[in-house]
Length: 195
Image (cartoon, rainbow, N blue to C red; front, side):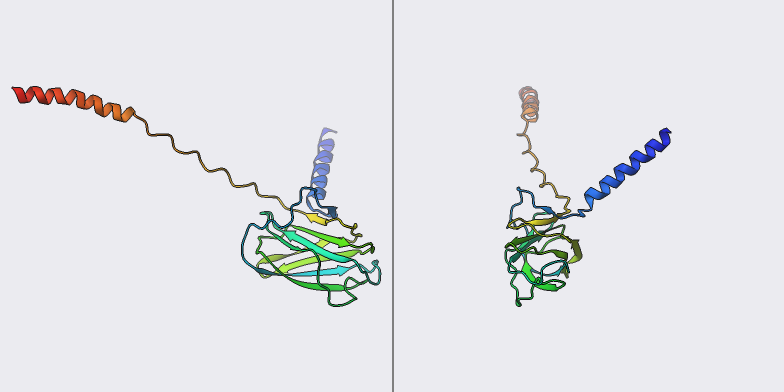
């Protein structure tokens, strides 16, 4: 009985842990999200493939923005994706965007932003670059209006530790020992010079 209870709790713990860590459902971005923080310099190219669900409307008029980045705080931010066709983000479509931004480590968060009232339903988003592994996020849900909405699977790095404290001031103990030694040697030298 105790063994089966233990097995149940272990299975439940790992099942819950796995569901939380996979980032399987998109969420609104935390209110603490800061946009535009760039830690690294340099320019890298990114390809963002957005597939729109076949449950989405035939076309939308809303403006779509993207924000993605790594665990170090490096971000690629495009408030409005430039579309070349009125069929962009249409039902069952795949749209490809080429973006240039700061170089990042592995992408671990991605948010979409919709400015408009259309009930747009992205299916998947895939980000690729020559410098990182391709990342794919599955949405399959409507994007709320005026809200950054997506995934954050980052295990953020803590800031670097503070610099070590300054070394202590030199001790005067060694200086005092030298003075005591000189105080002993000088009288001995003087007494031997007098003799």
